[in-house]
Amino acid sequence: MIYPETAQKAINEITHAIRTKNDFDAGFNRALETLQKGFDVDRAFLLQVSGDQLTITHEVTKHSEPCSRKSFTARESTMMILTMLSRSPDGEKIHALSLNRDEPDESFLPYLDSFQEISSHLLAEIRGQLFPGFLIIQSRERRTWTDEEKTSLEKISELLAVIISMWFDQQKLISDYMVLEAQSKIASLDLGSKETLPGEVSKGVALIANACQFTDFRLYLSDEKYLFDSHANEQVELADSSNPFALVSTLKRGSIFVSGSLAAPVCFAGTTGMIVPLVHNDILVGTFGIWNSKRHNSYVSPQSREIALTLADKLAERIATKGGK
Image (tube, rainbow, N blue to C red; front, side, top):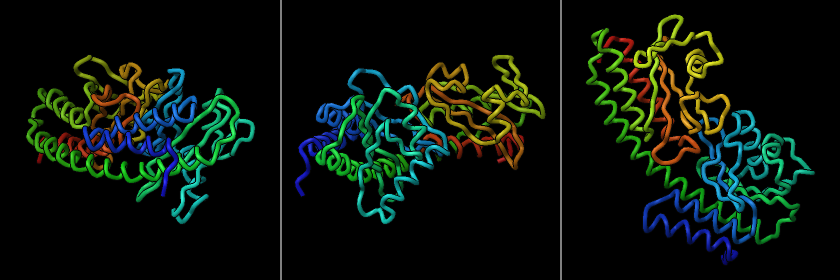
């Protein structure tokens, strides 16, 4: 099949970056640049599944104005994904979806409300063995998308499904190695002494941050009512739901906070990060936050999230058993 010119250029940019540098992020960004310039749109971006949310992971804009909202809630994300899947339940053919601000689709209202300055949207699902997300272009002016634009988005999204699957496989191999290495070091921590426990657990969290490719972290150890940061000599009431560390500790479920989120901890300083509780046998023994990614600060990759949760379970087990292996 002969692809539209813009689609072929974008595909060439992706494959060149991966073939010459093994750089998936560069390939995605170059493809988006080709789309943005080729079709003279105001914004082109990838909206990918991260945890239970859809998050903007790669973005190119005409006016250097990035999206103010970086992610959507689990409920909003589910509605968007199910709507796209229902349009082609057999998964054999991807059909680009055109959305206009003055003709809203109820399932995409939260999405449309996040881009008040945008009149026209064109979305294509990226669908392979999994559903990793959407490829999207936007125009501030009201626009009727051409067949070439629709076909280009569909063909690029088909390739992205394959590329992202390859990227996931590569990252899985790297993640498995990082987890095994960190687990071995966590197993060797000296957690038997009450005096040395905070420092040793802090070493464990540093290992987790490094495995997830984050540079900064904060650790709180827990008792029945409080979280304690021994290094900063700070304590937080677990009942204080306004504190993100206390809230995550109460829920006993890890949470991702994207850059610019009003709910994010102050210490994240505008970067994306996550807070993970340390829980063993349903007993909270601590909570930690990691932020400031070495690779990107717009989102937390599914691999980083999985590494953090896996290693947190191992560290929590060692704390709860007072260093038992």
